[in-house]
Image 1: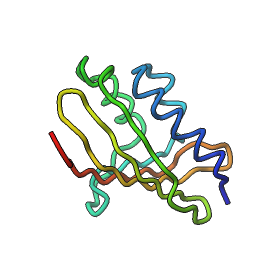
Image 2: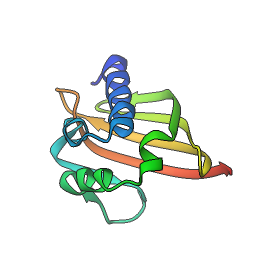
Image 3: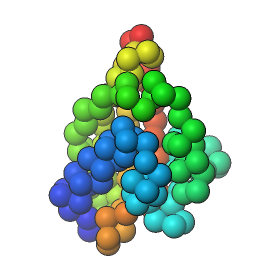
Image 4: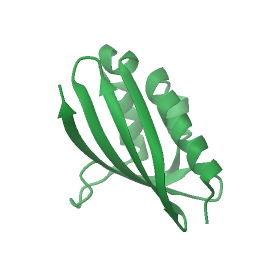
Length: 120
C-alpha cells in the first residue's frame, strides 16, 4: 500500500522534472521497466528510455509554459488516481486524469494519462 505522502512526493517531482527538462530528474521518477500510456485504452506503451528522449526533445515553450494543479482521488494498493488541471500558455487548459503505480521506493512503474482540452 502506498501512502498519500509518496504520491505527493512523486507528483511534485514529476512537475519539477517537467519544468526543468533535466534527463536525470526525469529518469529518476520511473523504474527501469516503466510503462507510460497516454492513450490508456490502446495497447501501445512507452518505456522509460523513450519517456526520457521524448521529454528532452520538447519545444522551448513546453519547458517553461506549464502550470499544474492536482488532487488525489483515491489510493488502491500501489496505485493512485489523480485529477488535475494543466495550463499551457500557448494551448489553453486541459483536464487530466492520471493513474500512477508506485513501487516501494516511490518510483513509478505504470503511468496512464487521459487528457481533455477544456478551453483554448
